Length: 402
Image 1 (cartoon, rainbow, N blue to C red):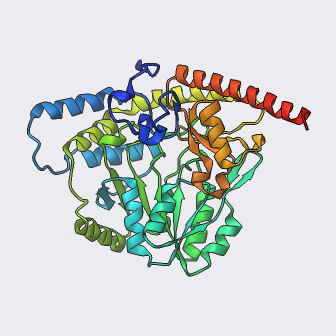
Image 2 (cartoon, rainbow, N blue to C red):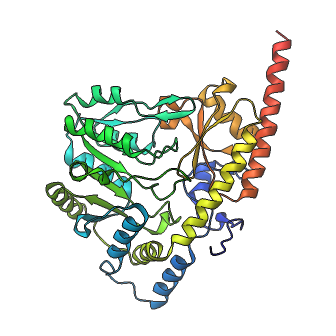
Image 3 (cartoon, rainbow, N blue to C red):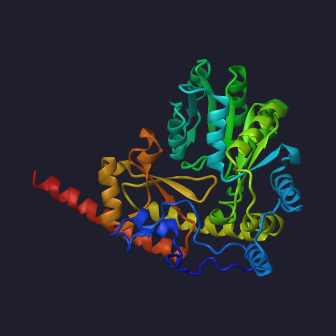
């Protein structure tokens, strides 16, 4: 395996990185551990950087079409990496995954219709549904013995309601880190097909899974599943190029795909960016060794986190099967959501994503991004350990004075 330096401490404040920006950290957050925004602190793959530099040196940046090699690189990646054979003609370009989720809601549901989600789930799902004047229909996941499962009985009841016409699937799941198995997805597919509920699969984290867990593209369940779904993918998470890439929408059904094409044209979101094109082409064509090394490094960070948390009272880790996001259970501290946020920020120096942002089911939890240097993670865990020890002492002293 090639040598990659993921321990390099890169100054992300040199650019307006959202994770490190006062917009996220607050004006007083310069010393916080920035682990909320879902990107990596690692330099992008060398082939991606080289491809963008070569394109820059060309010097002419007029209108461009999609490079001839991009679709073969994408379909080759999906086939080689995930065993997913995709017809190139089924793939549409999109500015980003969220854009495709919004367009799907607009095209294939009516105002007031319900869209089923499985909280705790990616907070932008709620915004997209609300801003399109649709109803959020929660089908909460079940936390059983430290592992989240789908509530299929609840899903059956909700899907049977003709007012609920769509389901947003997060596969793998953000924030709980589940990599849904083929059997689980097949059960969901059966229910949705039985009740004519269209599945919109956000699979942006699909490339990042840990040993023993394999991402199953929803559309690989069979021809009927592919026809009753729309899959949204992007190399943004996999190769840490969110600021310079776009996305793809895979639509097997001819009628829905044509509708999407018309809407893309109406909204003029079907233009091409030269740098996004070459970045994605290089990532899919030559980025596999880098991604394999990233996953190995993340596995090491996860081991450090697991080891450190075992000795800390008041916090538990929900073991992730994929993504670089870890769902932490702080309910043992007995703090309300705002108080937990204040504790993590003011006492531990952590800027993580509030669990409550992912739905009421996230109360008492927080989402931690471990795609950072091991040294930074270790320092952050030291600070958390000190904060928890101080919290325990405070609680004990308050008990003595009662």
